[in-house]
Length: 169
Image: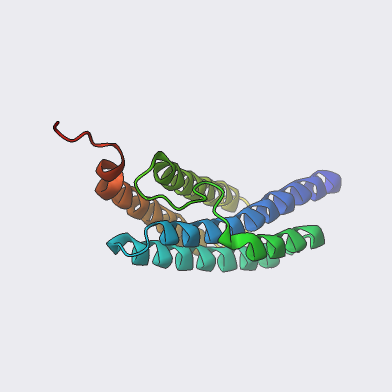
């Protein structure tokens, strides 16, 4: 029985550390999107979202520690590399706001936050039988992810026509 619990904890630790690593890329992706929408009303909204994603990242790191897990050394190294390379936006290298790449960028951000939301869902399910989980915090993080998705979708609704709307000829 102990081995199963140990394997389960190892799996959970790996899963959470993988999300922690991805979250650094998420912070950088939101900052890059803000640069894509520089000079528009959406720049500040995307910068605010990058701050929220950073806060989620810190909360996840705290959850990992509260569960008795530690970030893996090689993953911390990768996180540092992501920070260094954070100025590069692989989805929209030229930061073209009126191109299909800007749409891909918003789609990517939505997907990333949905993946994070799914992680919170998984942890909430585990909280049913794992007293180490902070249910109130997880519910708060779940709500925050929903609000982040809604904000990205709002930006998408307000900008999609500048990329794809056919003007009357």
